[in-house]
Amino acid sequence: MSEAPVTEERNGSALVVTLANGKANAISHAVLEALNGALDTVEHASAAGDDGPRALVISGTPGMLSGGFDLNVMRAGPLDAGRLVTEGGAFITRCYASPVPVVVACTGHAVAAGALLLLGADWRVGAEGAFRIGLIETEIGMVLPRWAVELGAERLSVPHRQEATVGARMYDPAGARAAGFLDVVVEPDAVLATACAEAERLGAFPAAAYAGQVKMNRGERIARLEEAVAGDRGRLFDVPG
Image 1: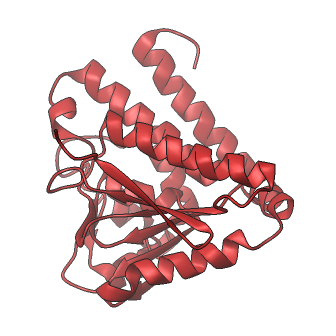
Image 2: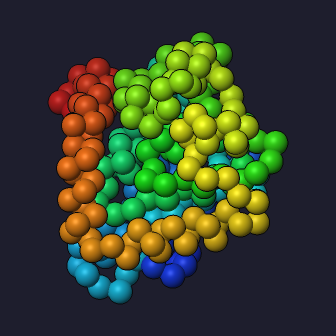
């Protein structure tokens, strides 16, 4: 029996999910299902006010957060690829809009969808080292979906925005922090502990106030993100989003 592509572990008030899906920690349908389930758990616990987790931490294996969407699916044809990308966009949008904190521990490389996952999180810590972080879509002959462009406009710093998207520039961790993919860079051994400490801090805020701040400060962008994902779904399946 193959190992699960995502594992879960409680760390203080955080639920830590670790991507472990092959060498590149590819984002597949199974990975997205597990990530959505983990976020369900945290959101339900927060709403119930019980002793469940108050924040979600998404991590990778040493040296790799994620190399992007599952290539087996992406090469299967435009409908299969479009469905996976759209489901990925829906999850990342959900992270950005979530009433609970979502923190990403970037343990190494974060390419394409891996980098987009960083843009959708509340807070991002990266590992020092010879790692590549960024959006390579132009280089590989693809165009970013509109939901990804919306995230870039929200999270990437203005001086880097064109180079990071149109220019497909790849950054080392320090450059990724300057560009807006990361908030802080630490030694590799400290990445997860740093992420969990920040998740603990954010998760300790009054839940209603945190959710209200997300809605107030991100509401217009969330609406555009949701509209973009719904439009992609409609074009793929000819059904309402």
